[in-house]
Image (cartoon, helix red, strand yellow):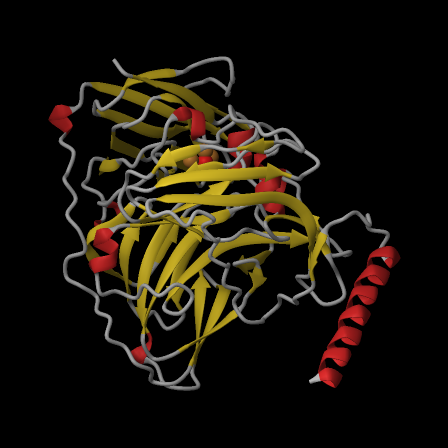
Length: 477
Ligand code: C2O
Ligand code: CU
Ligand code: CU
């Protein structure tokens, strides 16, 4: 016992010395920063920790997020300056319950201003965490809200003018899970980290020295597309799965890349949730398009594979990650026929109609001919009233312009139609981000339950930064 302790102490000290020597050798700032030296290439899929609720009281939760800079080892022999929440890259998963009061405590330990936006959460404007709630360097922010929406996979990320795209790229993002009585009652895979797994999809480019490459050239007109795919902050990782049903909460946390996901053999899977929660019925799919900001929950039944098999998750022709098939395992979960009830909004109940034209491509983008101005309110909406928002694209030239993932804060909307047709089965649930392809016309039924100032924008983060964002105010009447 004693000898073991001494050895581990020596090893730990050696480890620390090695890291310090490494930092000096690379001329990196020797500030008080955390370093993650876990190698992240073709390794095990990292599962983000569940953030501890500091409040023992039932019905109230307190969570602390520290946004800080650090270093992460993606490749051997190189170290990448990164940013993370409570760690060096990405953040923990925050789990909240419908009906609970949640008190967030955010500390900004970055050398720059930031903000934390709760993407998909229906809350008052003052706690939304958009560009109006800047947390200065060294500052703190303590928003409180009551969770009033059904079980869903949401997320959080910075939203500060001029630095959103880079801060997300450097690693600031995390998943926010809402649970409720309905999600408790369903006999679907729901054991976090066991058969309920978050998959945060991102892409990055690296310089020779291991640092991230960030730049949008003419070649990368519509946002930063990285050369390397990351899942939960690891490069093409592996997940060993038993031959059971597994649920994946997929988040496209990339700045600009769309993923067209499929299992390499074309095997089908079930989509059970979209951005804002469960679909009414599971939808059988063999590929899934997920654009920046969107989430999808899917169940893959691995009992169709054999022990020792490897199954790649692909996006187009690129490998995203690998499932290694393990033992038969025990599985009493089901894919229910009915997941939830969604009361459809009715077009005839809409009081107003707004037209939103996403203009341009590349670095020249705007909405309805205007670039974002924090001092201008573009639209007014009355709380609890239904509106039709028609989203179209215009002026996408040359090679650019694959389309725009359009996102609205503080709401879960319904898609009324896509190009005049009823949307696909997996787009008939709650959404907060919708892809509007080139020359498409997507009509939404939108309603807000909370007042305040909010944003709508393209979730290609470089388009957002370049002005493809508008501001609207929700008022009592
Ligand atoms: Cu996910 Cu306004 O953003
Ligand atoms: Cu948002
Ligand atoms: Cu866009």
